[in-house]
Image 1: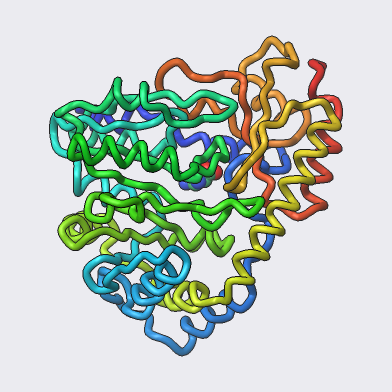
Image 2: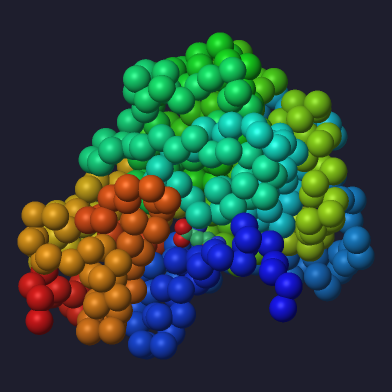
Length: 387
Ligand code: GLN
């Protein structure tokens, strides 16, 4: 047969799907792919059900239903004092991944350099390459995973078209402080680069930490494309409702991509998300508190077993460092072994690298109820030793 598009033909199935399949095959507890095991907020699910039965179920506007676009703008005004025009600066997509793809394809052309940080979420590089872009990989180092002037200086050039930045950072569970954002903003402005900012974990931040959208840093308003996700905000990951927020000149082109990727997104789920975004602040603070409690439960349990845990500042994830355990196996081998031998699935962090992977760090999802976490801990109780 004739050869197919090499960007995609040679890609592995995503590690999230692969580990979820391994979890199903082995009847394992799935602490791999990031999704909560609860059903999600009942009032929001009822709002969706009501919209299915009594609402509009034909094609909505490709940009999203007006009430959701207004709710997104109002939400960010309330939480971040960010003023967005709902009609020219907000678009609804079918999930965060589609939002990112629309943003990347809108910005990147053949020969453009795009700065990307490892660990890197697995959808970024193939889409950059499909656009003809040339990824410039920078490397964040555990345990702090912070940005530095040296690393930015080594990568930004006159050819830099864009930078892709994920904050809070999956899988490292870092919430970046203002200092790092200002540093990145300075380089974007000096080199006239566009920032595509994957902020899907924006509400999942712990211990009183504040998420600061890059678009709110002075000088970034017109050069940042902000991506969000209702799935993460409301623990409804299967809904696949994402948002793109950007100045009209940027959003206009992202919309031209979106119109041929998915065109539009289920209107009933959009209506329910519009309702959810208006929930009182307590909802969001309680969600953070609940998840932080789950994080602490899994952290304490893993530490009791003997795993060195790198503390999670946000996201559904924590990571453990295998290196002091002297298991003499990579993170991938460890994950394959624990899913078959202990019936617990996790994600090897090396999957977030294309070059020179860190091979000693493993990611666990703690967005689960106590019984699930306790059962997983019980199963892992002697996993720090090789059987
Ligand atoms: N973002 C999710 C994670 O990191 C995965 C989403 C997906 O599988 N597409 O686990």
